[in-house]
Length: 524
Image 1: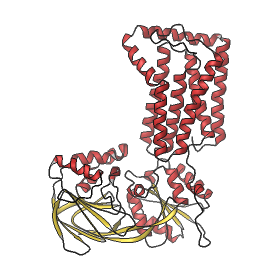
Image 2 (image 1 turned 30 degrees about the vertical axis):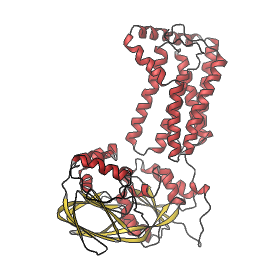
Image 3 (image 1 turned 45 degrees about the vertical axis):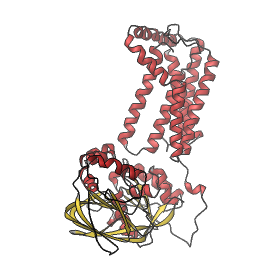
Image 4 (image 1 turned 90 degrees about the vertical axis):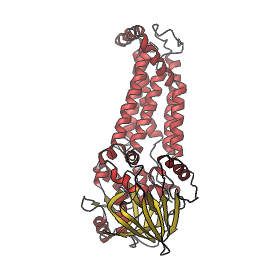
């Protein structure tokens, strides 16, 4: 809908408003067929009067989606969008719902239709009837909600669930107005046409899609001529409609002055390394990667030290690197940053260990409880509910047994202790925005280590409080270390993970921070 030509959106909106005008004319001239339809409302209201159990729920719907209720919902939506940086979308929501309320009041005064004589005598309404204010407001707000969900939410399952919930709310309000006898059916139809028409016209007046951040920034200096060749490494399993995604990226790339991109698709056997190498060999000036943290890690590791910048379009479940770089999770905005952002040199961490070939991570490595969480995630549940799958796995493995661990930082004396989990981070925030390593910076050339050892089930509560409050005190419950190189050894074979991907269990991880090795596109 949002990528359709504005003329199409405008035409659809004006068609709704034209039908509204014809309906208003029919009301004013009391067309016979329309009167026959409206008379059906009396039978619906009479049926409701014989169902005393139904009247209270109907009054609740009436109150919840009245002027105050719609105002509260719209304000909450707009504030949330504004805080998250979607300010054009916030203005769109307020504009559509506000214009609908004003237009409804004006039409009521213009048409001057009285309320049905059979309306519920409780809380008798004496204002004009056409069009229904409840119907117009819920239609406008519901349409706005669907537009924004389709714009901002990547998971198709969540979008479809939202559509069902919005449809149920809208239909409940429509039925409420007729069953209580507050409105004729044509009043409700008028509200539907008005709310939908203004929401569609609003897409033309105030496009909710964010504008390129490059328009608000000074042009970046160019050292010399460049071919501006673009390559895209795509994990096709992470996008719902591959062709639509290709069309979006291509159109935005050409508009930003890049060549039409060359496409390199990952496979189950090669999750990004070979594709990144092929893109570099092809002479790409920028490689954009779309996938989860694992795909991003492989591409970044392959392009480390080449001087070729990496643009990240986060399409996984955790998207931890993108979150820590303040990259938007909304795909269109992420594409914009990748194409028009500035380059930042960030650290890469080299990893080795027993039965582990030399590899890398960008975000974190872990042994113990956190790796057991990753290992216990059900892929089918993860596909449906996203990061909540990690919460479910965490609850199952909450009391993963503590292990004896020896940690060596920068070649110093080893520290022996016990811990349920050991996390080595290149960034500060981990799953669900948890500030587990508040001092970690992705470009400081240092690794931050945290050891957690809650001895009992209830010990997780003070531990969580300390982490959320970013308290830096260290003791047996929470211990922290920092250095350029870290070696972890455990006395028993322990689960291990890199950037959320489970690797073979083992006794050791050896890590070294490679300072400023990767160029990543970030907001200006």
